[in-house]
Amino acid sequence: MSPKLFDSCGRDPVLARTPVRAALWTHEIAGDAVEIQGMSLNISSGGMCIEAGRMLLPGAKPDTRFRLPGQAEELFIVSQVVWSAKAANSLYQSGLEFLVM
Image (cartoon, rainbow, N blue to C red; front, top):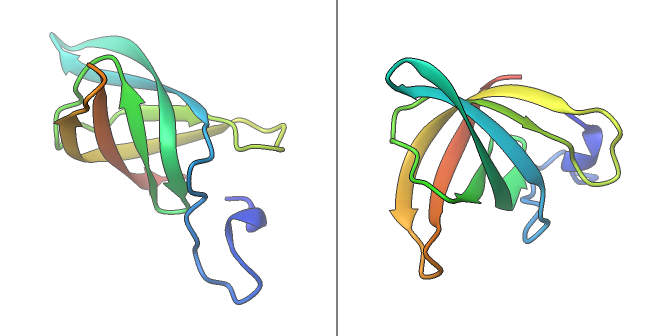
């Protein structure tokens, strides 16, 4: 992970309200890989809250791809869906925990 995710004390702050476009691949539907595009609502070194057009099933382990603001390198991370909920805007929000970076 980028050292810019940590403050000068080494704490892990959330990059609140910094939109990051993310692509997720999940095998939860009939074993076929399905790509889901979403936008993060917040992100930290341990995970992200993402908003997308469909609900991700808690326990699913999507492969997640995104680029942090100001960074050229794209990150590929295996994550796990911790929670999902319907948002007020007809989208779904999901909490992802980063497992393998």
